[in-house]
Length: 179
Image (cartoon, rainbow, N blue to C red; front, side):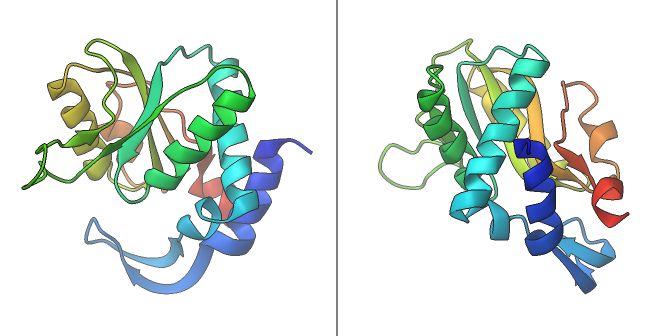
């Protein structure tokens, strides 16, 4: 079974919750994708990393590091970094804060790759793309080049259009999960 196939099962079993939910975008939905139930699970983290690394190979995306907006991207970036080393193509992880740190180094991006480096921005779910765009802007402001954006689930609520200027490669679209 491919990593993507197993990951789809895990997302359907663990991440999809039915009910009434207010999303970060302010929209109301009858379902919610709590992808942290997958990305923080040992098997789920492994399958997410495998699926993302397979996707990068399939689409011939060359990156030097992987990161995204805190909290949703943190376990994904870490899993990809660990698994990439095992595949002999190490990709360091970086973390993007909501804003500059008010103490210490004052960094917005922790473990930032070198200026000009092509990077992969990851996210657990994308609805309108707002938080992902803010993370991309932080990368670009730091001199990084965003080579691609990957999310576990695209809710198909405007995020793809908002991210159209970038190579947006969702692992799944909500229509694949809700069928």
